[in-house]
Image (cartoon, rainbow, N blue to C red; front, side, top):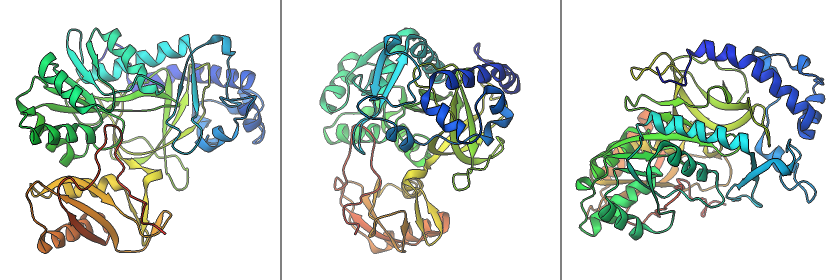
Length: 434
């Protein structure tokens, strides 16, 4: 068993008084939560109850936090600590408008580093290894991983995003054993190298730690990466408002272990109804998080929009924490004639269909909005030198129909047609939607 772990039920019992103290703190320091909880009749920590009553409290949505910001409250009214106590402020990418700011006290930062150390430690990252990464250390919370790498004693080679040539030069000259990036970028790096006669499978890299987007746990994507790099792939997952690297996969690779025990409590809920889903083998639902020991901007029942499949019981690595595999994000979900379709699931099905395909796809909805009429248009990229084949397109349509119960319209496009990125890939192209 990992040194930081207790059996899961014992951990929950230990978290009970910590959670009650966190509620007391929220009511005393967060104007946002005082008002939110008062609106449902909760004015004291005793009113809120313990973890067994948590499902009765209201969810926190990202849009609520955005709406609480103004010139007087640039972070939002959920700020619960003096700015004099804040030692770091990260921000989101701001793709929907003004960036959201995420403050941390010294204690919060220390807790985040500990969580990240657990996550990457589960993946086998250890002192003395050389690791090259594309994680931006600028405004984004992924920068905390840099602190974690230093704590673990790793020789970190931070290249950052946006410079493939520089990164591959570092791989060739500095001989790192570990590569850290998004799964889609790891695939792009292998394609870029192959086009220039560089043998990534023969490089020094023997471990690839992927994060930042679903994909690292997709069997087809993982197989492509491992073949291209001759390296073992494990994945990590976190969420900026709660903590980076909350989940980390061990070398057994049966899902990502929860790494936030004692600092964060998680629930599984039905994404449509919000009803609790029991945490048991095979359970599927959306992850919802509650801080236990946070001070700057703690959150209560924060909806992650990450849809996962759960595994429980002790892993053969000795860890006892629950494990998850991310299925997709509920805010990326499309509904085609009543059928829920995750874009990452479409990519996984296509990716398993042989060497004539690159594994890169783009879903191109005809209409704006979640609900789509069949057939759902999907551009599927061919491998280098492969020619469009109506029979291949028909097989892809049938496979998607068999596995995902969705009717599609397949367009086979030449290799290199669909965009690559050094950060998070976009599997849905809305440019043609009306």
